[in-house]
Length: 93
Image 1 (cartoon, helix red, strand yellow):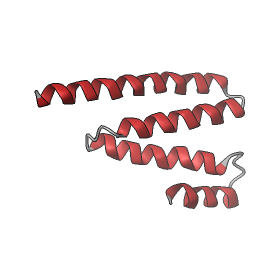
Image 2 (cartoon, helix red, strand yellow; image 1 turned 90 degrees about the horizontal axis):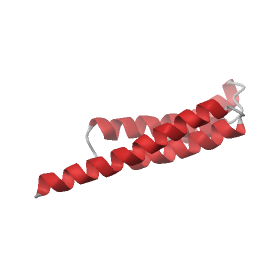
Image 3 (cartoon, one colour; image 1 turned 120 degrees about the vertical axis):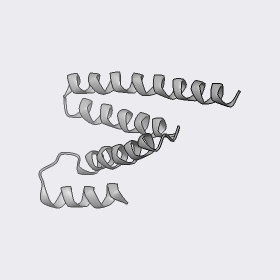
Image 4 (cartoon, helix red, strand yellow; image 1 turned 60 degrees about the vertical axis):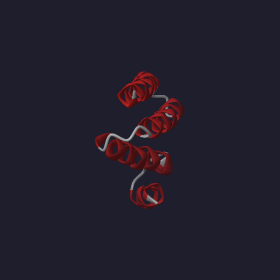
């Protein structure tokens, strides 16, 4: 819902190249940050999806350095997922 609403606003009120893609990364980041702050493991899945979409958007826009930065973020999210999962399993033992 956030993606559609923000994307619609951006499409009608800005000159954004990809309003719905940008809206998805914004909305997805807000959801992921909320899940992260409440220490829910699945926050990493949201971050991974957001980063993949952001990489695609930035490559399409020709912003390769920014796309590389988001690739680094993607690697950190994958690492975070495995670390959190390992730590949660160790706490159960």
